[in-house]
Image 1 (cartoon, rainbow, N blue to C red):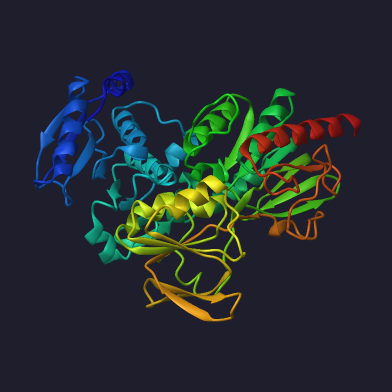
Image 2: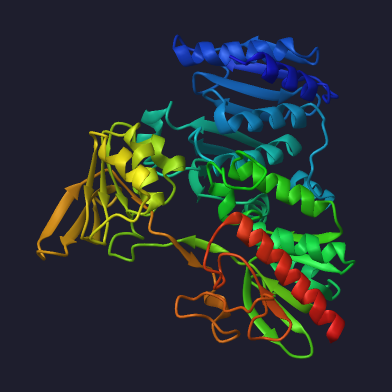
Length: 514
């Protein structure tokens, strides 16, 4: 189950346990149950503070593994085999249940511990999902702090009947006390805001009382992280406002063009970015959305909760999001068959027919990946020819269960009211209309900058990108920008980092001269 290197690493981690942790497994006769039992047995053998007990009646789903703090009585459950991207979630659950300090602000930990009521979370994931561990770990942290909060990670690929019964077609999907709570990425701060009705108001009041910043950064992706580090290293009072630290990078599967690092993955890079930022005196305001930018004597940034932050300079790095088809039915069936992350949601469509919208590198890569899981993939490309690299096109054409259709204009997503059942498209050469019966549609047609809230405040390009000069300066004096939301022609992680440094140095130069 665990190789020698992984066992040794886990044994080292478990040396940080301070109190006893009990593992409880509920099993059936399946091969996966044997894997869960082997994993739990190996973990228990690595530490004297970990005990193992089998109770097939203890847990609702089989196979499952429960991690219980003997000292505090907190419980975290994994339904399925928590390997792949969720292995880190298991390790953290063990550490936090065994008394290892949780790396969150003391205020957040106290807030979680004081939450009234009982909260039973269930989180449906796929083990190939990059976004899921962030959500699972946030809910597990809450469960490790407050005994009245529990979380069950559920491998959707293993518990397909439950996925079908609940109509789960997107991961992560979180249920709270039996009702749908959230779909997609959600931060710990946002979760707390949703269940603590007074949290947002208290947060807004705290933010309003913050002193003025020298440099305020909007966005926690590679550009924003670089900008905040460069500003803090200059000794400037620096803050960073982010809806979700890491942004789109957190959803990236493999990164092989980050110079000096042969291979990494999005969540790992994001964790390293945040750890690096936290090495400096940077005020990180996570889970906050900027809604308005204005300038008087100072630059003012208004947040969605009503708080206003003041700064002498500002670096905008709001990033981008998946571009949508903007056709009837897309929003109605979003999360019900319409998806934007093939790595996250692909396993939920095992053995079914799906479509990929877009013939660029992202679209053809998605089609190739999905072809190994689903019955058939139909690629719909608007242009007369695919835009993907030749090597990807050759690979896709070699796969018997991929059909590529060019000159195809998607016109409508169809469904039965609960889930997608097909897509309509028009042949741009003949004008004929066609319908393809499908269970899922993966949209891969590029990114759109998150700049709608900046219209009228600073100059944007026709595509909504922030117009900048070679120093990152925008049309508003003292406001700089970097990353995928700007007119920088190439949207790459390493370019965004360099641009973030440039914008921060531009802000520093502005402060010196003004």
